[in-house]
Length: 219
Image 1 (spheres, rainbow, N blue to C red):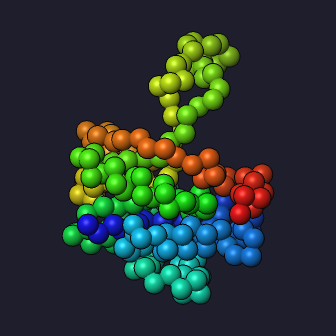
Image 2: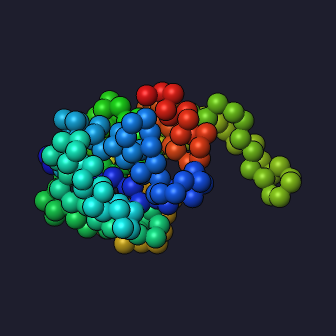
């Protein structure tokens, strides 16, 4: 079973206030992209990697992969205007005979290989997709303006992370629809069955400078 990873790394990073795309903001001694790229390359569950890089940063992404010795990087494509576009462009580089596509965000650099294992092996039980999740510790309200409309049951809610794994053919068909917040939403909308697995609290998504500091402290 061949597993291809699509690494979405084309985000602008405007909220970081940096002078470069998010994937190339420094995390320790390396660009943010380096951490998740190296971890995917080292995973026994991943056979090949496609990187969706920021426009104009394709060559630096390729050079970084070479510097890290990431031999599984098969292609580097120019990312799109949205994350959904970037994922579509990345998946288009995955060969037709691939069995599984694993989609991960470079903005979640602290990727533990156990999470990769959990989402990939879940597909062996007949699921179309699998996503890592965390429980929500706080009470959640649905509101309309300033008015509370409903208190939601926490046991029915999860915070969703990446990487997310999918049967390749099912994901390809699902991506032809409208934009979505994550790949599992596209597969769900197409009628696919998506399983949840345990996520990892360390899989922090870097959105602003405080997130970057938090991830740096966890390295």
